[in-house]
Image (cartoon, rainbow, N blue to C red; front, side, top):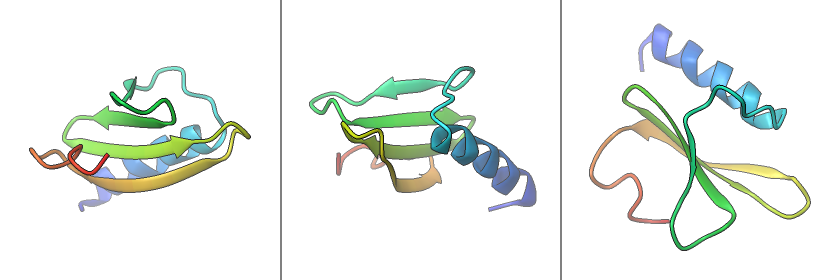
Length: 71
């Protein structure tokens, strides 16, 4: 990934970690109430937030047809 993409990813990950999700293009994935995705341009970040407010990053990748098939 380019330096610009890495900076974007870092900023998004910090927001996710702090549970400050305002301003993010955030959507809950179908079929699971704990898995979310954030998109910014061609970047997709998929993560899980459990009932204890713990966040687990599942994947960070560029957009493709297969991004969401495992979740």
